[in-house]
Image 1 (tube, rainbow, N blue to C red):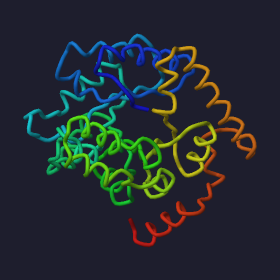
Image 2: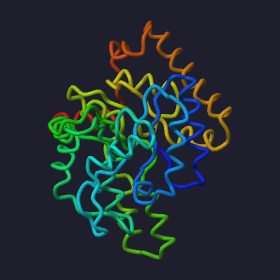
Image 3: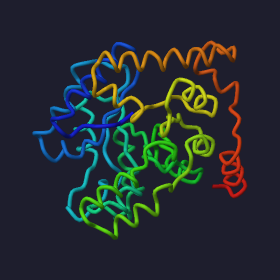
Length: 294
């Protein structure tokens, strides 16, 4: 799942991920390419991905940058194509990090016209809409489908919360207002399992947000996901070495195989034949959202 890039210090991380993804035959996504699109000197941390051949690569830009913000920069089809060519991508993830932008000190907070811009972009390049910790509701999923995206990464409230990240950044910047905002919205969003159910509108779903192991992938598949993604869960290994990342991902794959075998499932694509069961507060949230059509 999209994690990092845009800094020469993280070139090795993307290289490790790309090399292991190629060897294992799994997909990979890069982090936001905004910095590299604006500063050519930072492209190396992304271009290293092209030295390998993962079967599926996702480029990455932000939805807020599809409309004019205070810096005057607007990303359109030209920039999206540039981002894809930079990493040899098959698809481009457009991340919907509106919560993060709203609470960060230098955030891009203008949203008018984003949906129309996304719709226009989706006619030019294959787009996957990617949430970044707040999840996707039924209404949002329908709007994204109408915009023409090829898939949805639900990015639910179960993993990294960028509101928390911005809370600590605001503290470092002595911005008490933004720190208070970020703290208030620390737990804002829809849990990943619920989002998988609510975002099921006929598009392929990618489950990210809190997945820790292969059993979590199996759970996500049973709730309708086509793919499961990891960011923080494998970042430490990606930083350490290719070998450490290889062991981590091989373990996840074996865990998934065992989880499927124990259910009598031969292929991952058939996991939805054993629908997952939600319990406790997660089940209550799912039930209430369904009742209200959210």
